[in-house]
Image 1 (cartoon, rainbow, N blue to C red):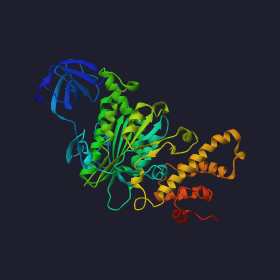
Image 2: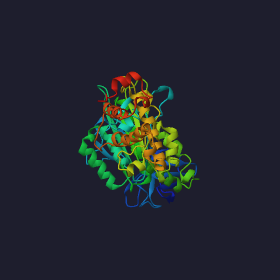
Image 3: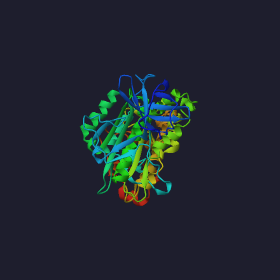
Image 4: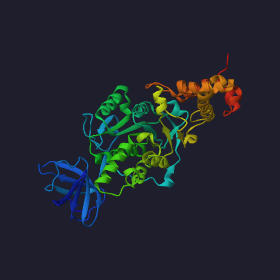
Length: 460
């Protein structure tokens, strides 16, 4: 490590958020840096790359005002997040500073923001249901503790509304369970920031949440550290305090754009669509911080939200995210145009860990069969829409008409719900059974006979 007291006035180049410093002592990757400007003001940064000849420093507050006369000091330590249970109810900037007018955080610990990878042997299987209050997620694509389940959206779709609704409504079922939400917003506009702050305060959801807000006009370098600060906070609450923590990150696409901007400033050889070749590794470092650890009560569950440029699900960001995570919730522009909220396309959505968090003792015994029946009937009904466009509805058989009608009812009664409508899993299953009752008995093929007799509404 370099001597803390030594300052260098050897800045050779400034490019975007980066400063290049020549001829230093041996410096560690990730080491914190302070830069004193000519006017005496200070800026913070960290070492992004180091070699015998030059050190690349990433400046959090941007490089405006830095010139060759500025002095650089290497502090001999990595960035740490001050954490405390008193953080619940706080709104912080993307750099972890108070944004709500409250005092600075009095830390119980200071933790390295990179975190420690969970040993695969120590990982416990994600299980136990987390209720979001949204039928298309709870009933069809169930979220379980320790899972990472991204939401794939498109530009202009209400993914921020959905993120806020999940943050307000999410809960774990069971006694003596402490639950918290860590809400991380990256690259948002000032208008979105005001909306988020007002909504958290209006609904009272802030008392069980820690909110990090990084704005679009904040430096790209800060956007890189914002999710790491939030995830470090979540890990402390989960594994030190034993809480069940849900992390909502929006918008991961803005994070990846910051990676691309810094890669361009370093003149790196770009990968797919100009994004850096290490983007997969970088995303994995964030997503893999979700999970449960054997012998510890708490868990970290993630819902990353990303907007797909051009609604292209093969774009590198959703494509790479799909490899790392355990399923996806896909939002539909077609449903949005039809005025349906939340516009979740259940046909393209999937929760790979749903089986571990459903069934008797977790949700309800009939859950899996009901979900399978809804998928099957809705898929057939959607297929018939294409046929109706060609031959007309009058050409369909009575059974096919029921399936066609089922698809419309499913979107209108099951998918559609209000922005403040918080449905329990029992509410969602009850609506599902009402829909299934519109089908003929021989069309209900995915549910055990004993559950049909127990739960199917009797026709009068």
